[in-house]
Image (tube, rainbow, N blue to C red):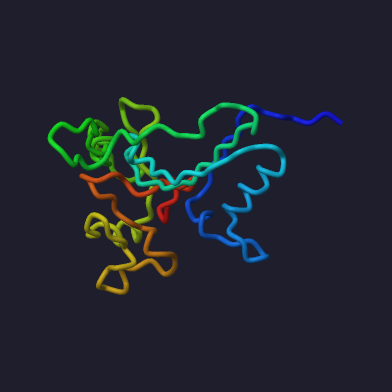
Length: 181
């Protein structure tokens, strides 16, 4: 039976994987490294945040890199390119913000489509959802509204949330078209 033996293996997942335990009580991240070793690979993992690489969103991930034990490949990732500058001559660029990413988009209302950009359209929110969101401050969720009638009946405080203009955006989920996402 032939087996696939790639020179390099790259895996990516949620940061939470680094603190999760398997049914035997071992850290899943350590188990992944151990399994790579058993099949002849040296490996390492890195925790990264997309905002440190010029992506306008806060998105933490864990990246596993494995290479054949006999290779001389370095197990590394590029250094961060964006962040908070710590000195006058630093080469680090400021974070790319939510505002940086969307400020050139045409302003549209609920249910409208851009006249100029075929990929820019707003979800057609029901009237009650617009009422929940209209006065939510940046960085806050409609779940925090003082008036309980203006709070969504279910969901987490990470949903129905307003982005902060001058910071990297919150993680965009695969359900970004749903108002709760």
